[in-house]
Length: 98
Image (tube, rainbow, N blue to C red):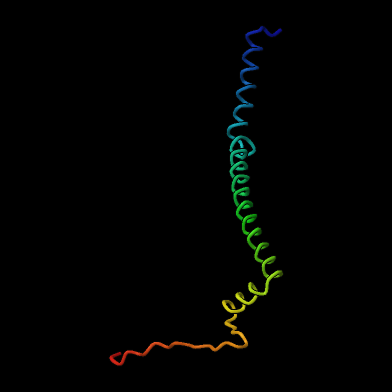
């Protein structure tokens, strides 16, 4: 039958074959590294989005609770002026040499 030497050689070849598949195949170590990188990138994106959502939530609460925030938003974003206010627009003088 087989001697222990042949059995050892056969086990070594099988071990090398499995190691080769682990390190060189697309489903092996390289895919694991790519997936870990993708997970880390997604976690950082999630943290950024979580912070942005918290800021937006705070702004929504502020707009719902106070008229001052809504008024400020109307002034800056929509160019609105108040009922008892006067709007002045300063236009620079055109250069006569040009």
